[in-house]
Length: 549
Image 1 (cartoon, rainbow, N blue to C red):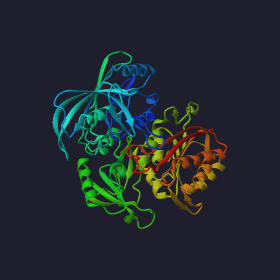
Image 2: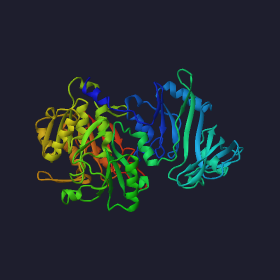
Image 3: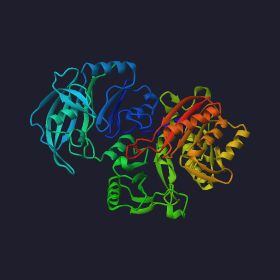
Image 4: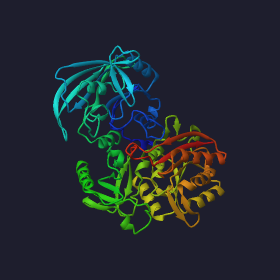
C-alpha cells in the first residue's frame, strides 16, 4: 500500500451521509447551511462543500432545495440518468415528502388540507385564492402527531406536513395561515427560537436506474443546539478532533469564539469571560466530555509581551499536558497551550490541507496532472509554521521543502512528521527568510509542482524588513512564481479582515499577469462551514488555488 492509499484510508465519510450509490447521494442537511452558496464569497453551501470534496461527487446536481434554516433529507443526483429521472419524478409529483414541524400554538386536532396560490411579497410569500391569475398553486396536508416538551418553550405540538407541490416556503406559509406558525419562524409569525423547527423527515422516490421504490429518512432533533448540530453533521469525530464550536456572531455569541482542541476547549475573546460565557463553556465541556477548558485574550499585537502572558489560561476542569496530540482528517498533530499566542495549527485551513492528501482541489481541478507520471512531486511550503500542509502532502507521497524564520516551529514540524510515521530526514527544513530563500531557489533553478503561500498578516525579518499582507502580497506571489513549474499549482491565502476577496484575487491575478504566467484554473475557497459567514460575522479568510502555465 502506497503513501496515498495509507492517507486516504483515514478519511471517514461525513456524518450527514444517509445513502450513496452510483446514481444517488442522500444527505441529512443541518439547519443553518444553505443548499447552495448564494454568492461566490458568502461561504460554501452544502452542494459546493460536497461537490468539491470528493472526485466521485464532482458531477453532483441539485434536484430540490431546502431553506437554509430547514434541516433534513436532501437528494442529489450523480449521473445524467439520475438527473433526468429524478427531475421528471419531481415535476410529475411522483416524489413523496414528509416534514415534521413544531409549533407552540394550538395545532389542528384533525387532518387538514390547505390549497392556495402563493405570490411573493418582498422577502416572504403570501397566500391568495387558488383561482388567482398567474399565481403558483401550493397544496399541503397537515396531521397532528403528539404534544412534546421543548426546553425553554414548554408544551409544543408536533405536526406532520406533506407538501403535494414544491413551492418555496409553502409549509411555512400554510401553517401560519391556519394559525399554527412554526416555532422559530419569525418571518411568518412564529415565536422566536434558536432555529426554525422544520425538518424534512422522509423522502420516497423510484430509483432512477432500477425503478425500485426507495425511502430515505432522518430523525428530527429540535432540542439540539443548531451550531453544534451543524458541526456534528459535517465533522466526524473519529477522524477530526480540532474544529470550531462557536464562531462569534454567526452562532449568536458576538466577539466570542470557542474551539474543540482534542480533549480540551479553547475560548477566545478580547476580554475576560462573562458569567454567561463561562456557564456556556462549562456546559459545552460537559456535553463534549472535555477534560478542561482554556481562555485566550485576543490581541491586535500577538507578538508583544511575555510568552506565558499570551498563552491561553485554564478556566474549567483539569490542565492539559505541555504537549498533546489531536486528530485532523485522520492525521495527528502536536499542539500546546504553553507556547504563546498560537497553539500549533490553524483550524480554518483544515479543508485546504485535506486537498493535499486527496489530490482533489475542486470538481474538475486535480492537484496533479497526469503528465506528472511516476516521479515524486515536490511541494514548497513557505511560512511553514509547524508544517501542517507538508504533513498532508508527505502522507500523499510528496517531497516537501519547508521554509520558516523560526527554528522552534520547524522542529515542531518535524515532530508532526514523526507523529504520522513520516521520516523528516527525507524532507527539507530550511531556517530563514522566505523572500531571501525564494531568490536563492530561483538562482539554483529549483522548480516545484506546488507552492503554499500562507503568510502571517504581519511579519518582520532582518533580510526583507517588514511584510504586511495587504500591501506586500503581490510581491510575495511575484517572488514565488519563478520557482513554480509550468502547469504547477499555487495556493495563496490571507486572513486580513479589511481586505476584500475581490481585491485579494485581483492582487494574485495581477502578479501572475505581470510575470507573464497564464492562469489555467482557479478555485476560490472561503472559510469552512464551522466558521460560518453572516452579516454579524464577516468573512476574514480568503484562499485561492491556481494552476499556472
